[in-house]
Amino acid sequence: MNHPFQTVRDLLRFAVTQFSQAGLAFGHGNANAYDEAAYLILHTLHLPLDTLDPFLDARLLDNEIDAVLKVIERRATERVPAAYLTSEAWMHGYRFYVDERVIVPRSFIGELLLERMSPWLGSPDEVGAVLELCTGSGCLAILASEAFPNADIDAVDLSPDALAVAQRNVDDYTLNERIALFHGDLYEPLPERQYDLIMANPPYVNRQSMDALPAEYRREPHMALAGGEDGMDIVRRIVANARRWLTGEGVLVVEIGNERDNVEAALGGLDLIWASTSGGDDNVFVIRASDLPLPPA
Image 1 (cartoon, one colour):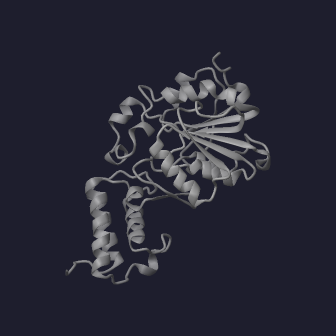
Image 2: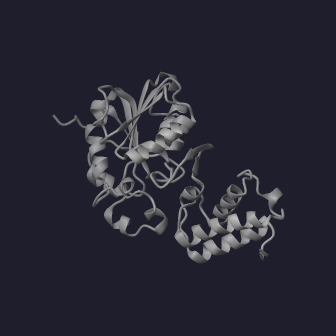
Image 3: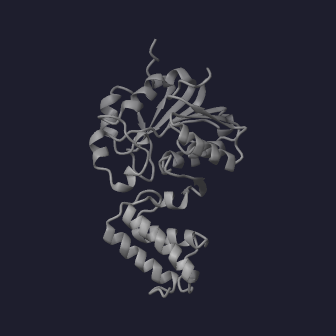
């Protein structure tokens, strides 16, 4: 087949035009049409993802052009997030397998784990137990294993499909001896123990925002996004029971996206600390065990 395209540069220009004309939404790893196009082209051609310039004027085979055009078309017309097209997502240099059974990893808690939860936790080597609720792909549990080398990590999800993806990632990083996956509703499946750190990126999108989500986000599992009328259904439950599961010096860290107003309305009176991340100062709150409510009797 004779193509009007010959080089990576040709395909990159075409993809950016297609993505821009389609009005795609970004936010699953790339921030704009150019970065998304470059990533998809390099991945499809099995080229290094961080090395575009040397290949821009490389002449491609017809079958290579066909493969790239198919990916561009799916992204532009079906609005499939790039991570689902490539079956991978990257966070802070770590690659994770993903598919439609989990939301695409993009948590700001990952940034805090790179800093080993400083200043809220003491020596990283002394952290012995970490819990992740709503683990999804397991990415934060895996990052926690790197941040806290002596910690055992428990990770929970209500979706058995999500846990299958998490298990694949735990296997890929050979962390089965340190990360235990539990199927169930928040704390319900866990054995009795206490944690130095509980973290969660739970469903928190309020009903009005769910109705306005771009098509790309509607491709993700509904149960991993929808947090009820005010977005706080799961957040309330996590906070209400956290103290029972934390050590005396432990901390709870919860990501809530753009829902700060709803968080403060739902958890009024609690001493919330808002962490600074690349997304601003409104996306993640930290609360110390001593500032949490006593668990229900």
